[in-house]
Image 1 (cartoon, rainbow, N blue to C red):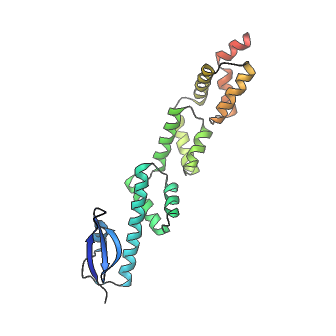
Image 2: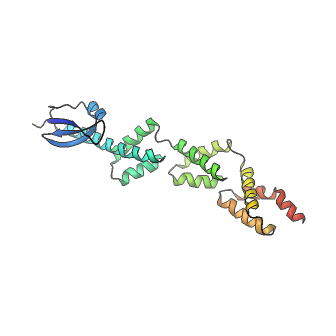
Image 3: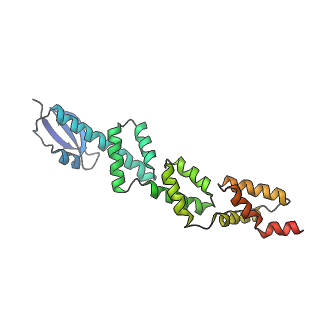
Length: 216
């Protein structure tokens, strides 16, 4: 009969130990995992216990890797799942990891989305289409994006005001050209920043700089 012959701390990883069965390492587990499974030296080792240990080891390995990524950068749920899949982790382990990361607040798509919107607005005015594109690129689903855009609309200046301010900044930097040329140049910029045609029209036609040029 096989037994657990040793549970030895690993010098390379704090609070982690190697579980040995008949002298052979079968898993590397955290002290919390060992306690949760009730493992101890001299314990009988069978197929059922081996399966539970393997599942716990797979979960802990995936969790360790995911938290290292999240230490460097905020990631969406979809991004974490994709990276874990690329690293070869199995679906059951990924599901458990994502559930645990959500419990810990380390993966929160709404929080990530709000942060990205704030960054976009702080760097430069951005219309809803550009915001939607950037959020989708980070793996946020349509429903979450819709909620974030709806909430953000009440927290920032109106789209027309944002677009007009960006247009003014561009006119200061580059005032050259006649009215049609400047209109096309600024309209193109605003479109690339995610503003729709109605917002662009309202923003530009309401600017005194253009009215003055027309009067001349």
